[in-house]
Image (cartoon, rainbow, N blue to C red):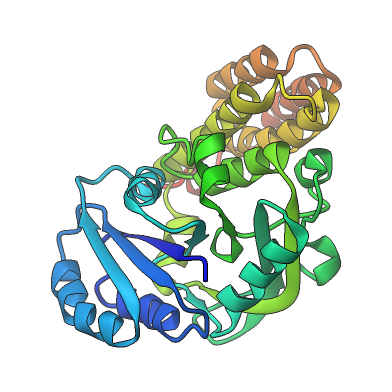
Length: 321
């Protein structure tokens, strides 16, 4: 039976890490190597891992608990994969969970189809217990080798749904460590350009939204600006990695980039950061050329400049740190 290395990066989640690990120990599939990378935590993470090591061995799971200086999720995942021994890599976050048959079903599908990556449906679960499917239905799971369909947005996948061949992970270069956020979006889009996907059309995992994570999503104005910059960088990185591959479609990329770059521009314009907005449009032009998406951004800019002449400044417009 082929070994699966489960990679869990963690940072200061000692209160929830055991939930993710126990969902791995409950898998019906065996040969599992459990690789947990402590990314420089300052809480009780090491004590939690020590308390779970014997439990993992008793469940016939091989524990490999690593620690490194803080470098972000991308660097932690790559570090874990480099130390791992499995033929397959499965990705899980430190506050999310899998259903017991996840690995068994996905490994079987990978072996049946010969694909490089297998995904599945997951539930996004809010703190109040409500949930929704991601993606919205089985028909939206990415399958085959069609990078344009993934980049267009009609097909999708989630980080914790992925099981892939270790050789494939290493061949495409792992996660790009320049990205402290959005690294998962860039990785999946890049993977779609390098190999074939298959999918199990069942709900096999839960992405658990906590109050803390929802607060971080809302964030402050300064945090939003950092997130917007990571959006831009993730697009630059994607084109850098894939722009010369046979399946690259520059028109589809410009369409997707235009959508994702316009939202930050709207934020800047709403807060009357007109100098920053002009710089954002120029950076977009450098990436995309003088495309219709960039021309639309310019028109949006001038409409907001005109409206700003008549809209009174509201002190609540600007977010606070």
